[in-house]
Length: 255
Image (tube, rainbow, N blue to C red; front, side):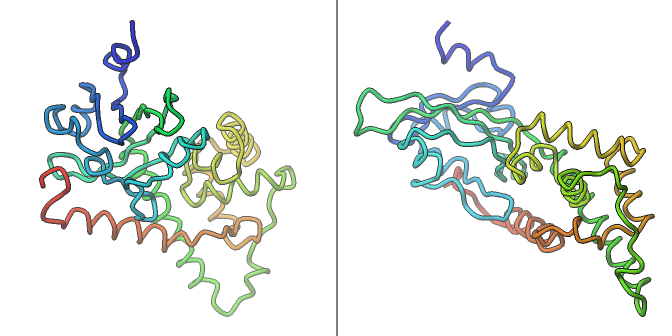
């Protein structure tokens, strides 16, 4: 069985772009996820079809995208999330992985196999947790007026390591296990192990219970739980970008 036959049987959406960045293969699952039949996308530039954006709303899919640049250098690209528009107008999240097939000519970029699966529900859940966190922080800020923030904040459980405290802070931001791995530059299994250790040491069984624990014990303002990312700005920015995409009258595939 050759590569295209294998891609035709995978549960992931899959398409292949050639050295000129045009789509030369589009499997049935890609059609199912995005709604575009292969007859509409074949030979089209992949960036015009996908028009993907990152979590901050920046355009990722373009003629000189980072994937193409990395492919030319022979470097791997980490799995990442893209915000794209489906054929029916829905704006959805995809988690994308890439496989590079070296070219026989050094002057020609390699063929790229793109594998993707929809993760809209997971991303919406992360955004919901982030919104809850923002609301909790506002409430605690109001309750804490006139009192010392340091005095009102309890100490972290002594059993937590510094890395586990960082993981707890990211959990409170609604960051997924994969996102934690990327932010802390660790493997996904290591991130999951840290998450489980945090839950065990807090005596809770889920992320939401961990968030409730942090809120109950006034740990949101603890220095180790303060991250460099502005959660509210990130949440609002993503939401605004989704609304902007939903409000567009046309998209690249319909041109």
